Length: 98
Length: 184
Image (cartoon, rainbow over all chains, first blue to last red; front, side, top):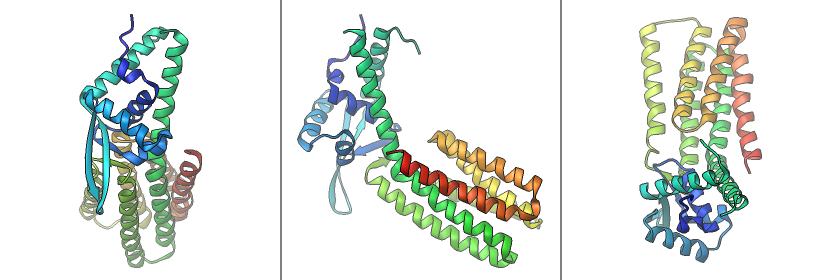
C-alpha cells in the first residue's frame, strides 16, 4: 500500500508543497508571491501554512524589507523528504518507476 | 486511493511546479537577458565601428549600466523569492571579469577579432557555469553564444562585431522577450 502523507495530500497543501519544492534548497518564497501564484486568499494560505509549519514541513521567517513586514516561506529538510516520499507514493499507485 | 486520483494529484504537482518556475524566471531571467542583449548589441557594434580605446570606454560604461540594471532586477526578484546564495551570482560575474582581464593581460596584445572572441567566450562560460548551477536555460544560452562566436570568427573574422551584435545581442534580447511573453 502506498505511503501517502495525509497532511500533504490535501489539494491546497499539495500545491503549496509542490511550489516550494520547485525552488532551490537555499530559496524561500514571499507570502504574497505564493498567494498570488496559487490564487489563494491571505486567510486560506495562512491557515495551510500554519498546518504545514506545525508538522515541521515549512520554515517561516518574518522579517522587514525596506521597512515593510515580509513573510518568507521555505521547505524544511523534513518537508522536502516528506514531499518526495509522497510523490513516490503517488507514482507507485500508477505503477511508475523513476 | 484510485489511480485516477493519484494522476490528478501528480498533475496538480506538475502544474504548481511549472507555474512557480515560470513566475520566478519571468520576474528575473527574462529582463536580465534583455539588459545584457542590449549591452552586447551596442557594445559589439561599438567594437566594430570605434577605435580600440573608445570601444573600451564604451564597454566599461555599458558594463556598469548593465550591472546596475541587473542588480535592480535582482532586488525586485528578491522581494518575491529570496536566496541565501544571491550574493554568489554577482560574485561569480565579478570573479569571471577579473580573471578574463587577468588572462588578457597575460596573453598580451592581440588582434581585435581575437580580443572580441576571447571576451565573448569568457562571458559565455559564465552563462554555462550558471546554467549548470541554477537554470538549464542559461546553460543552453551559454553554449549557443560560444558556438555563434566561434562560427562567426571562423567564417567572417572581419565582421565579428556585427555578427555578435546581431546574433548574440539580438538573440539575447529575443530570448528575453520570448520568456516574458511565453512564460505566463
